[in-house]
Image 1: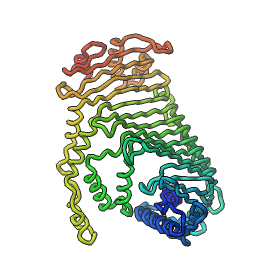
Image 2: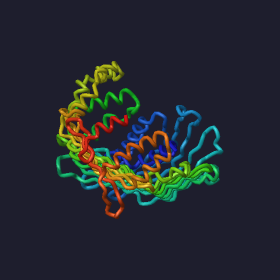
Image 3: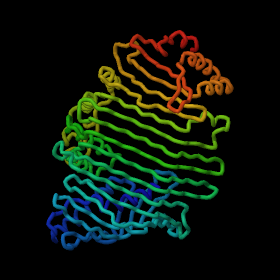
Image 4: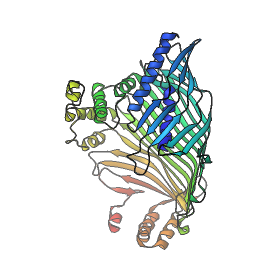
Length: 510
């Protein structure tokens, strides 16, 4: 799978990161386009230490009206898996294709192409065993901003992906993979953009018969940023180009960039989501499935003194035949968690992180007079005295508030829901104060189940019974009977349940 990912990524790289060429369409611009695409591809593979690339011919750009026709020859990839025990090296053959590159009025460039098919993977020690990957593709396009070396807009689709091994179908199919993105000026400051992107995979099916089956209706990765500084990101890309991400040179160069950009605001807001629909796994021994799973993170006001951070997790209808039938009543089928960290002192935390980096060394200290590594320790921040409590103290002495917006756990036997706030307070006995509203449906049934189970569960049932007696009777919006609890942790260290001090009771059950 890693080999296939590298092959597809490499194919996209040829057109998705085309460097700048002269905006006038002429022979000189064609030559520049050829040279810069070749340089980019070479630099890209320098960052992939286990992958090498060889063109089977020459890149050629020709003038066609107001555009260039960029002819990309077939090529071969060698993927070395020596560090992965038991896996051989893999070769990949990428077919030739053409891209139309059109300069736009704002200095950006539009690249349009059709993905070639098929891609072939093989082990050179056993040339008879070849994996041939076929798919359909048409009307792909990206808009590149050469000044930032990034894709601003994209519309890429690959359909009906199938594979064969020496002519025999591999039981893995994917209906569609799509990539889409859009970028616009934010209007906040020069070089500052709002961007959104989405990657989707539809209808993956792997059916290996008795060995197992995996199905996935859809997988979606989406993200959005606001007020992102593309000039800073372009500088990072330029200075790290060609460096192995696992090397000390890469780490030192990145630290050096952070030191130089201290105080700069890289972006304002972030929204990232992963969504999975109808995933199922089946073997001879067991099956497992989940109807829906969503993971999301948000961050607002990252370019202000305080930021708002959010986290969301939701899972619906998950099941497995590995679960004993007697426990099915209490296994959650729906869970949701939404938390916000309001007024997080992001600026103060950032200043402390920059302080840890220390002063930037000179290039000669880092790399020596001829560009060779001189002294690793000269460039690395000294983290031996790093104290994580410094960041804890920053948060504890701030106005940060953790808001539990929604906690919901549902099982056939009942459900639990909660919301409330937790706030730091250095003067409080427990250094935090909290207020949580809790509601439970099916609590008597839960207590009875725990008593039947015995052991520690039965002991917990005793405490739950005592707490249940202190709860308020109520009904939810569907008319279901619930028990309501107001939990409070006070500045003096008291734990109050519906106004009753729980200290003595909790001591009895310790």
